[in-house]
Image (cartoon, rainbow, N blue to C red; front, side):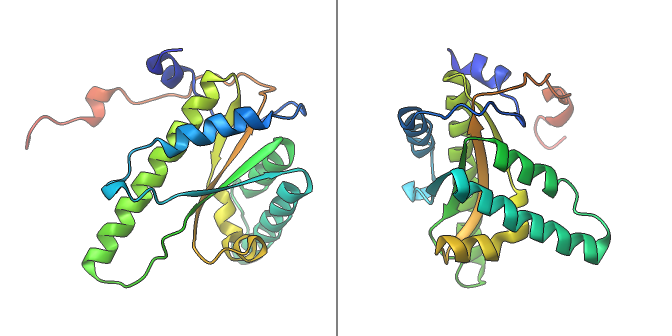
Length: 190
């Protein structure tokens, strides 16, 4: 599959078959993630692969976070649906930046932004490799509602960025509307 085809075919898959994903394929998507560009070649990413009860524990913590949000504001948005996806997907990959956010100076803020962009590139590589392998995936940021609980449970003191659900798709979502590039691009100062 050519990269352009993978980009066009990539979808956020939210329904999965129960069939397990071979570790060899999980390794291939993780290898693709680690080949992403990163500022100063810092490679500020680490991955935790969860299956079975471990990923269900993440979903439990998210549902507790949803309850807290609902008690405070009356809504938890799509958190409960994300927890359902995590339960249903055979694999969940937690994504962390192992470089702690330290200091509040301008340089530290720039470096943190560079790290965040680098991790985003790694996640995108992972998603595109999943398409090539016939796997479905979805990038989930709703894990952040239980960031402290999940990180404590995983023994992490660094920065949680996101989770990615991975598995054999049980749906073929249609393409979502996209703004044409001409609408979001300006040539020069305008």
